[in-house]
Image (cartoon, rainbow, N blue to C red; front, side, top):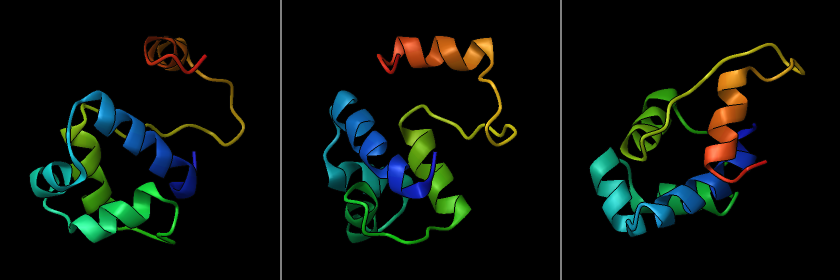
Length: 85
């Protein structure tokens, strides 16, 4: 998943958590404008630490795997729980 693809996913998870954009930004320690740009696919890059904090507030974490690799069982289960089949 690229940063551009991650933005709408973060918006979906933020709404699912019942958080406003400002609430998530405050909890993650990032600027609301930055979060807005991320969610709306207008942010070309974002520091790892900031993105990690946003994901942590949403109960998400980074996972690394080989490009084009087959998803793990854990990946498939997580996607299924989130309705991303």
